[in-house]
Length: 93
Image (cartoon, rainbow, N blue to C red; front, side):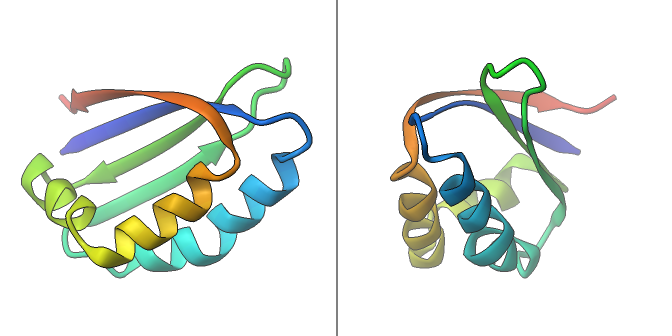
């Protein structure tokens, strides 16, 4: 399995908007992707960074999803609520 963790700084006052985009268009779009296994948008209890945790069968299928117009559309909606983000990729064991 391939896991991606995205540490996200949400813009001040945009928490509800970011959560809404995730729960609506983003989640609906990713659920339909080949090789998709799981997605979670983790809200920090301490007011720090959110974490978007995504699991695909493999990195190739995740990259295929990233290359779609649908991903571009829904990710831009998510990103509109961010001050920045950092991505880390993992192989599960």
